[in-house]
Length: 158
Image (tube, rainbow, N blue to C red):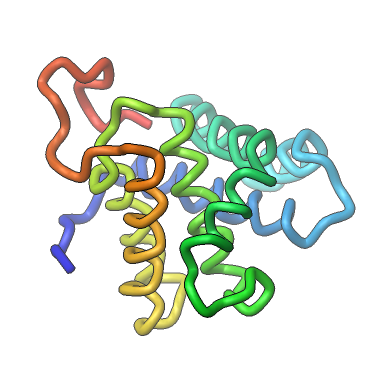
């Protein structure tokens, strides 16, 4: 697996916030809007970090069934409930980002997800997460390589 450099701090902050909110969403009992309100009251975020994190949470909530179906299909040999909650939420976040940013190459989207996984998941999960994510990217027809020069996001601003 290719080693990725650390994403910019604002990207990490947005993904960590999104991961925590998606985790709360998966635990259940509250809507995405309720979780977002609760999280932002407890953890004020810079505007760009907030916008990025909330976009990921909203995408994960909106496409939850599709994302879970993709994870189930490509996590060969694992039932969804057998995958740790953190790993499931990391995959949900990564796939949600792919769905919201259709022009971004899969490895570019995977970079912050895998970086955060190194902090919040067990070491053995990194290859599993990367493999499942790339299999989903393949099904979605996503290129793996470098970002195109014509990409609308000229910097990793989310």
